[in-house]
Length: 237
Image (cartoon, rainbow, N blue to C red):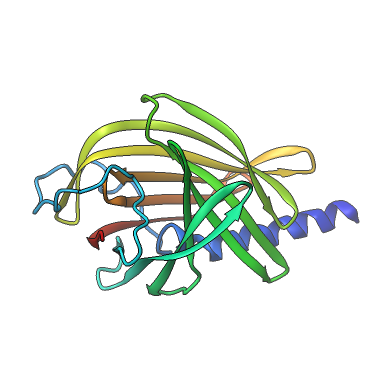
């Protein structure tokens, strides 16, 4: 009976994680690699003014477009609200337009950038994941494995890798330069076994922030959903 209860709790965690996926991408069924080779010149993006790969100046904003529905957008605005989790100071980014008004949190320690995925009790599950998704110092091929909090009591960890650095990409008609592409796998410990739950692809441009995110969520080796979003407008204060 204990085993069944554990599996039930794990399933609740999985489906809640799907529900809060909007924190990194809009939730629409797509092929996240469908535009990966799209390098045609676009209109270009304004030259960045800072060196951070995730600016946090109050009032800065980012507008993301879903890849499957052209009129669906999510707008995120940086605030001066802070919180500290596991020794990491996070800034709150409010979602002022989109399908979910749950705030997003980003923080960094030196060259490491973190995303906080946080959801209170809902559907019998809770999530408190602090994910190291970027290092802007190390070279391509650099990897990391770190504890990442818990999801409904299950220990979580992430395995990350710098896949590309200093690249230029064009998506939805805009060209971004000086991009770092990282790939991050999220795993939960279920009854002593680390089980893959999702793979995230982050594309961060210097002075701008996240310009594209992909993710796919899987359970017991089967992919249940894939999604992507693209930056189409931004203002850095």
